[in-house]
Image (cartoon, rainbow over all chains, first blue to last red; front, side, top):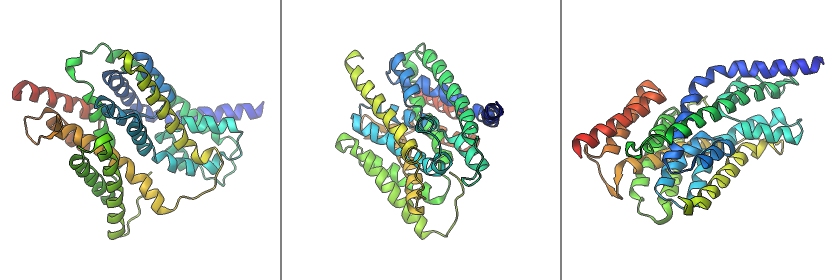
Length: 238
Length: 110
């Protein structure tokens, strides 16, 4: 009984700590919803995407490619690249959750989002043996999940009523711009991104959107080179 | 749309698998691996490079040809959005400003 009460209290604590993130996630959900239907998804497909994929950046990144009729594998590869940050989160979270049953680890993997990860990684160390920290993580993540789904659905149903002439599919490109700015945390990543943009333009004529993949490869290489040349500076953000 | 339906479903399935696997890759096996700093750099630089590589052709190319001109509505909208995103950090201001610029250029330069 006491155990159960502590779990619920950790769940609530996580949700309360994450409540501040709602301001950030709700506009994204609405934009992603509108952008999905503007890119040609049916309402059913858009709802399925927001539930099954549950990765806003990947969803927004793929939509301009869908409109441009890119091949399937290029879009899936792009989703993989923009989701690579989750690999870092996964490595950080793994020691916290290793003792949990498999089903818990599946659930917590599916529901991981940037904001709650940052809060959790800031509040807990792997070595502190708090037995309820996964409830804290789940509380925050569930709140984000519900907010994302509800705001996406608002966007999906509102988006279906907006006339095509408004070119709202451009909103996903604009949303990507808003997403990109906070990612540019140091000089190396800025140089890498600029190089990637340049290569993407030059190589736009390559078949199968290979230009996009070439641009990513060059961008990463330039970023690494600049980081190696530049003064040693620790970047603290995830 | 109906003809492309399988394509969108395949895309959703592929993305769902990617979204799950990138998050589960260390959590599910309960791995204790510490990422080496270079690997972590690559994982951080790649998303920014990918997003930029999607944005730039989308705003600077018109029917496949480079169009650096004040009469290109998407370029103007995109640049306005960049300025707003950098100065306000507001999603709403970025999208609203970008859409407004797009519409104005379409009205007056088209």
